[in-house]
Length: 244
Ligand SMILES: Nc1ncnc2c1ncn2[C@@H]1O[C@H](COP(=O)(O)OP(=O)(O)OP(=O)(O)O)[C@@H](O)[C@H]1O
Ligand SMILES: [Mg+2]
Image (cartoon, rainbow, N blue to C red; front, side):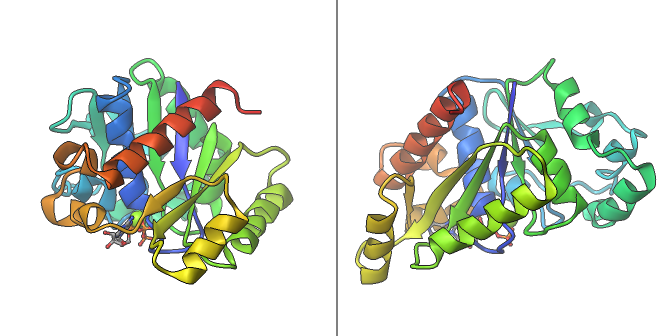
Protein backbone atom coordinates (compact mmCIF):
# COMPACT_ATOMS: atom_id res chain seq x y z
CA UNK A 1 0.00 0.00 0.00
CA UNK A 2 1.24 3.50 -0.74
CA UNK A 3 -0.06 6.87 0.37
CA UNK A 4 0.24 9.63 -2.18
CA UNK A 5 -0.38 13.18 -0.97
CA UNK A 6 -1.20 16.02 -3.32
CA UNK A 7 -0.01 19.00 -1.38
CA UNK A 8 0.99 22.63 -1.53
CA UNK A 9 0.80 25.58 0.81
CA UNK A 10 -0.66 27.50 -2.14
CA UNK A 11 -4.35 27.51 -2.90
CA UNK A 12 -5.92 27.01 -6.29
CA UNK A 13 -2.94 25.29 -7.92
CA UNK A 14 -4.84 22.18 -8.98
CA UNK A 15 -4.46 19.87 -5.98
CA UNK A 16 -8.04 18.62 -5.87
CA UNK A 17 -8.27 18.29 -9.63
CA UNK A 18 -5.08 16.23 -9.75
CA UNK A 19 -6.08 14.16 -6.70
CA UNK A 20 -9.36 13.12 -8.29
CA UNK A 21 -7.87 12.50 -11.73
CA UNK A 22 -4.90 10.53 -10.38
CA UNK A 23 -7.06 8.43 -8.06
CA UNK A 24 -9.26 7.60 -11.04
CA UNK A 25 -6.18 6.45 -12.98
CA UNK A 26 -5.03 4.35 -10.06
CA UNK A 27 -8.39 2.57 -9.94
CA UNK A 28 -9.44 2.43 -13.56
CA UNK A 29 -6.12 2.16 -15.40
CA UNK A 30 -3.78 0.51 -12.89
CA UNK A 31 -6.76 -1.47 -11.52
CA UNK A 32 -5.67 -0.88 -7.96
CA UNK A 33 -8.07 -0.77 -5.06
CA UNK A 34 -7.91 2.97 -4.38
CA UNK A 35 -9.13 5.35 -1.70
CA UNK A 36 -9.39 9.08 -2.35
CA UNK A 37 -9.30 10.72 1.09
CA UNK A 38 -10.55 14.28 1.09
CA UNK A 39 -8.85 16.22 3.89
CA UNK A 40 -10.11 19.64 2.82
CA UNK A 41 -13.38 20.99 4.27
CA UNK A 42 -14.23 22.41 0.85
CA UNK A 43 -14.97 18.87 -0.31
CA UNK A 44 -13.67 19.37 -3.83
CA UNK A 45 -12.35 15.83 -4.25
CA UNK A 46 -15.80 14.40 -3.58
CA UNK A 47 -17.45 16.93 -5.85
CA UNK A 48 -15.08 16.06 -8.69
CA UNK A 49 -15.80 12.35 -8.35
CA UNK A 50 -19.56 12.86 -8.36
CA UNK A 51 -20.21 12.35 -4.65
CA UNK A 52 -22.52 14.73 -2.82
CA UNK A 53 -21.33 16.16 0.49
CA UNK A 54 -22.31 14.05 3.48
CA UNK A 55 -25.18 15.37 5.61
CA UNK A 56 -23.47 14.46 8.86
CA UNK A 57 -20.30 16.15 10.06
CA UNK A 58 -18.33 13.25 11.39
CA UNK A 59 -15.14 13.13 9.36
CA UNK A 60 -13.06 14.43 12.28
CA UNK A 61 -14.29 11.56 14.50
CA UNK A 62 -12.07 9.25 12.47
CA UNK A 63 -9.08 11.02 13.94
CA UNK A 64 -10.31 10.68 17.51
CA UNK A 65 -11.06 7.01 16.73
CA UNK A 66 -14.69 7.46 17.69
CA UNK A 67 -15.52 6.30 14.18
CA UNK A 68 -13.86 3.79 11.87
CA UNK A 69 -12.99 5.15 8.41
CA UNK A 70 -15.06 2.31 6.92
CA UNK A 71 -18.19 3.93 8.33
CA UNK A 72 -17.74 7.02 6.16
CA UNK A 73 -16.08 5.52 3.09
CA UNK A 74 -18.35 5.51 0.05
CA UNK A 75 -18.05 3.76 -3.28
CA UNK A 76 -17.86 6.00 -6.35
CA UNK A 77 -19.31 5.25 -9.77
CA UNK A 78 -15.89 3.85 -10.69
CA UNK A 79 -14.83 0.31 -10.02
CA UNK A 80 -12.12 0.08 -7.32
CA UNK A 81 -12.38 3.78 -6.43
CA UNK A 82 -13.76 4.69 -3.01
CA UNK A 83 -13.99 8.07 -1.38
CA UNK A 84 -13.61 9.23 2.19
CA UNK A 85 -15.38 12.57 2.09
CA UNK A 86 -14.59 15.74 4.01
CA UNK A 87 -17.06 17.76 6.00
CA UNK A 88 -17.11 20.82 8.24
CA UNK A 89 -15.91 18.88 11.27
CA UNK A 90 -12.42 18.87 9.74
CA UNK A 91 -12.19 22.57 10.65
CA UNK A 92 -11.33 21.49 14.18
CA UNK A 93 -8.72 18.98 13.11
CA UNK A 94 -5.75 20.95 14.35
CA UNK A 95 -7.13 21.30 17.86
CA UNK A 96 -8.04 17.60 17.77
CA UNK A 97 -4.46 16.67 16.90
CA UNK A 98 -3.25 18.94 19.69
CA UNK A 99 -5.61 17.30 22.16
CA UNK A 100 -4.86 13.69 21.24
CA UNK A 101 -1.13 14.30 20.85
CA UNK A 102 -0.67 11.45 18.37
CA UNK A 103 1.83 12.60 15.81
CA UNK A 104 1.29 9.58 13.59
CA UNK A 105 -2.48 9.26 13.83
CA UNK A 106 -3.07 9.77 10.10
CA UNK A 107 -0.16 7.47 9.27
CA UNK A 108 -1.59 4.75 11.54
CA UNK A 109 -5.05 5.11 10.03
CA UNK A 110 -3.68 4.72 6.53
CA UNK A 111 -1.61 1.71 7.61
CA UNK A 112 -4.77 0.09 8.89
CA UNK A 113 -6.55 0.85 5.62
CA UNK A 114 -3.83 -1.09 3.79
CA UNK A 115 -5.98 -4.16 4.41
CA UNK A 116 -8.43 -2.81 1.85
CA UNK A 117 -6.50 -0.44 -0.36
CA UNK A 118 -3.36 -0.52 -2.45
CA UNK A 119 -3.28 3.22 -3.06
CA UNK A 120 -4.54 6.06 -0.88
CA UNK A 121 -4.57 9.53 -2.44
CA UNK A 122 -4.80 12.44 0.01
CA UNK A 123 -6.30 15.69 -1.24
CA UNK A 124 -4.82 18.24 1.15
CA UNK A 125 -5.90 21.76 2.04
CA UNK A 126 -3.37 24.56 1.41
CA UNK A 127 -2.13 24.75 4.99
CA UNK A 128 1.08 24.45 6.94
CA UNK A 129 0.01 23.10 10.31
CA UNK A 130 -0.31 19.84 12.23
CA UNK A 131 -2.53 18.37 9.51
CA UNK A 132 0.13 18.92 6.87
CA UNK A 133 2.72 17.50 9.29
CA UNK A 134 0.53 14.40 9.71
CA UNK A 135 0.24 14.13 5.93
CA UNK A 136 4.01 14.28 5.56
CA UNK A 137 4.44 11.53 8.16
CA UNK A 138 1.88 9.35 6.36
CA UNK A 139 2.84 9.79 2.71
CA UNK A 140 5.21 7.71 0.60
CA UNK A 141 5.23 10.44 -2.03
CA UNK A 142 4.22 14.08 -2.11
CA UNK A 143 3.01 15.53 -5.38
CA UNK A 144 3.38 19.31 -5.46
CA UNK A 145 1.52 21.07 -8.29
CA UNK A 146 3.29 24.28 -9.27
CA UNK A 147 2.09 26.96 -11.65
CA UNK A 148 4.70 27.37 -14.42
CA UNK A 149 6.62 30.52 -13.61
CA UNK A 150 10.21 31.61 -13.10
CA UNK A 151 9.38 31.31 -9.39
CA UNK A 152 8.36 27.65 -9.57
CA UNK A 153 11.72 26.28 -8.53
CA UNK A 154 11.98 28.71 -5.61
CA UNK A 155 8.46 27.80 -4.53
CA UNK A 156 9.45 24.13 -4.51
CA UNK A 157 12.70 24.93 -2.67
CA UNK A 158 10.67 26.75 -0.01
CA UNK A 159 8.41 23.75 0.49
CA UNK A 160 11.39 21.42 0.63
CA UNK A 161 13.17 23.67 3.13
CA UNK A 162 10.08 23.67 5.32
CA UNK A 163 9.91 19.87 5.20
CA UNK A 164 13.57 19.57 6.13
CA UNK A 165 13.16 22.09 8.95
CA UNK A 166 10.23 20.39 10.61
CA UNK A 167 10.72 16.73 9.68
CA UNK A 168 13.89 14.75 10.11
CA UNK A 169 12.95 12.62 7.18
CA UNK A 170 10.34 13.39 4.61
CA UNK A 171 9.02 11.45 1.66
CA UNK A 172 10.23 12.13 -1.87
CA UNK A 173 8.64 15.10 -3.60
CA UNK A 174 7.38 14.99 -7.16
CA UNK A 175 6.95 18.53 -8.51
CA UNK A 176 4.43 18.90 -11.32
CA UNK A 177 3.84 21.88 -13.55
CA UNK A 178 0.11 22.44 -13.44
CA UNK A 179 -2.06 24.52 -15.74
CA UNK A 180 0.58 24.94 -18.44
CA UNK A 181 -0.21 27.10 -21.48
CA UNK A 182 2.58 26.56 -23.98
CA UNK A 183 1.52 29.63 -25.93
CA UNK A 184 2.85 31.71 -23.07
CA UNK A 185 6.50 32.57 -23.24
CA UNK A 186 7.01 32.46 -19.47
CA UNK A 187 5.39 29.04 -19.27
CA UNK A 188 7.68 27.71 -21.98
CA UNK A 189 10.68 29.25 -20.20
CA UNK A 190 9.70 27.60 -16.91
CA UNK A 191 9.41 24.22 -18.65
CA UNK A 192 12.81 24.67 -20.27
CA UNK A 193 14.37 25.42 -16.91
CA UNK A 194 12.88 22.26 -15.33
CA UNK A 195 12.64 19.85 -18.26
CA UNK A 196 12.19 16.79 -16.02
CA UNK A 197 9.07 17.94 -14.24
CA UNK A 198 5.84 16.37 -15.45
CA UNK A 199 3.50 18.78 -17.22
CA UNK A 200 -0.26 19.07 -16.96
CA UNK A 201 -1.72 21.40 -19.56
CA UNK A 202 -4.19 24.16 -18.87
CA UNK A 203 -7.17 22.58 -20.59
CA UNK A 204 -10.88 23.16 -20.75
CA UNK A 205 -11.31 19.38 -20.58
CA UNK A 206 -9.72 19.42 -17.13
CA UNK A 207 -11.72 22.45 -16.08
CA UNK A 208 -14.88 20.61 -17.16
CA UNK A 209 -14.33 18.06 -14.43
CA UNK A 210 -16.00 20.55 -12.08
CA UNK A 211 -18.98 20.89 -14.39
CA UNK A 212 -19.41 17.21 -15.20
CA UNK A 213 -18.30 16.06 -11.77
CA UNK A 214 -16.22 13.30 -13.32
CA UNK A 215 -12.46 12.76 -13.54
CA UNK A 216 -11.26 13.71 -17.02
CA UNK A 217 -10.20 10.14 -17.80
CA UNK A 218 -13.82 9.07 -17.46
CA UNK A 219 -15.18 11.34 -20.19
CA UNK A 220 -12.28 12.19 -22.52
CA UNK A 221 -9.77 9.37 -22.00
CA UNK A 222 -8.03 9.62 -25.36
CA UNK A 223 -7.51 13.36 -25.47
CA UNK A 224 -4.20 15.01 -24.56
CA UNK A 225 -5.24 16.37 -21.13
CA UNK A 226 -6.30 12.94 -19.86
CA UNK A 227 -3.20 11.42 -21.43
CA UNK A 228 -1.01 13.93 -19.57
CA UNK A 229 -2.59 12.85 -16.31
CA UNK A 230 -2.17 9.17 -17.21
CA UNK A 231 1.50 9.85 -17.93
CA UNK A 232 1.83 11.56 -14.57
CA UNK A 233 0.19 8.59 -12.86
CA UNK A 234 2.66 6.27 -14.56
CA UNK A 235 5.50 8.47 -13.25
CA UNK A 236 3.99 8.24 -9.76
CA UNK A 237 3.90 4.44 -9.97
CA UNK A 238 7.53 4.38 -11.16
CA UNK A 239 8.59 6.67 -8.34
CA UNK A 240 6.82 4.45 -5.78
CA UNK A 241 8.58 1.41 -7.20
CA UNK A 242 12.03 3.01 -6.91
CA UNK A 243 11.90 6.15 -4.74
CA UNK A 244 15.60 6.93 -5.33
N1 LIG B 1 -5.00 21.71 -15.75
C1 LIG B 1 -6.03 22.55 -15.56
N2 LIG B 1 -6.59 23.19 -16.62
C2 LIG B 1 -7.61 24.06 -16.45
N3 LIG B 1 -8.16 24.33 -15.26
C3 LIG B 1 -7.66 23.72 -14.18
C4 LIG B 1 -6.58 22.79 -14.26
N4 LIG B 1 -6.30 22.35 -13.02
C5 LIG B 1 -7.16 22.97 -12.20
N5 LIG B 1 -7.99 23.78 -12.88
C6 LIG B 1 -9.03 24.65 -12.33
O1 LIG B 1 -8.41 25.53 -11.41
C7 LIG B 1 -9.25 25.73 -10.27
C8 LIG B 1 -8.49 25.30 -9.02
O2 LIG B 1 -8.25 23.91 -9.08
P1 LIG B 1 -8.29 23.00 -7.78
O3 LIG B 1 -9.55 23.22 -7.03
O4 LIG B 1 -7.97 21.62 -8.21
O5 LIG B 1 -7.08 23.62 -6.97
P2 LIG B 1 -6.68 23.37 -5.45
O6 LIG B 1 -5.21 23.52 -5.40
O7 LIG B 1 -7.26 22.11 -4.97
O8 LIG B 1 -7.40 24.58 -4.72
P3 LIG B 1 -7.61 24.78 -3.14
O9 LIG B 1 -6.28 25.24 -2.61
O10 LIG B 1 -8.68 25.81 -3.04
O11 LIG B 1 -8.00 23.45 -2.57
C9 LIG B 1 -10.50 24.90 -10.53
O12 LIG B 1 -11.47 25.76 -11.07
C10 LIG B 1 -10.06 23.87 -11.54
O13 LIG B 1 -11.14 23.47 -12.38
MG1 LIG C 1 -8.45 21.67 -3.29
